[in-house]
Image (cartoon, rainbow, N blue to C red; front, side, top):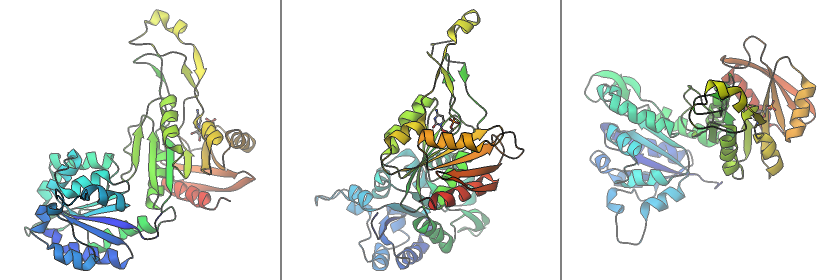
Length: 393
Ligand code: C5P
């Protein structure tokens, strides 16, 4: 990771753009190198010269986009920056980004940027509530974009409501927390949720996992600055913003997703409750009831963590073991068989632990045995687990 992080600071058109120079100044003071990019709407509210003076860099506008000087400005910006913030993010900007409409330098640059994107929306409350705006927000969150605000307060029109841009301090703190967190610069791969192993198009083998613990692990890692990829089996829960989500259904799809990303990861945490068995063959359509018993021949699913254990090149590997009762010896055997550094053991029969509840209680076992235990909300347990991972030899 470069020692000095470069942040792409986008400004879109809205009255809150008058606060953009303050945001830029605070980010520069915090040690970030800031590349300001203004939309044409933003230029109506704030002068590029103000941002250029505060950042010590040119402030880019759409006038710099389609130039004949040989520079491919949006590609250059996307490659040079590791994180992006757009403040304010107007309703029009949200629509353009959600649609991948790269007609502005700002959206074109963001589409190519490989790193977290933070948006601080600002607009009238009626606009923010509108289903079209909310649909764009949902799309963007689904893509891993992180929102800061908006907050309730006085709006440009003089009315009060939800739509005011978050205060400058809150925006800067949210971006810096990511920049300075314990997992800053780490690439974390997490499997979560159940898998579905189809017998035919309508029937499958699965289990009661909801993905809640895996989502908590992803959210806590994100908040400590990690770049998180979540390989997520079928769940009704909404994944956290700011993480890349790869939706999968079966164990073999989950394995393929992990195989494709493992080499570039620093830490793999297998929280997924991968189905143990799958029908040997998936049939098309719906098998007639009379043929069902005959069709149901089963085989074991691939073991994703064991694959990782055999292909690791310095990655830290962490697993979860869901048991009925707490059998530390069985968990240690699992840790060794899969080549893990840490395994978190939980008892599905314990009230307030295991599947589909918002709390958990885990015992942590390292290669040399018991390391500790944690209980509380799944988020608190996740934070404790990340603390243990940070302390691994
Ligand atoms: O073997 P068992 O299912 O108890 O192991 C649990 C751990 O191994 C979990 O971390 C789970 O995500 C992982 N696992 C896996 N692939 C499987 C089965 C389990 O990665 N096929």
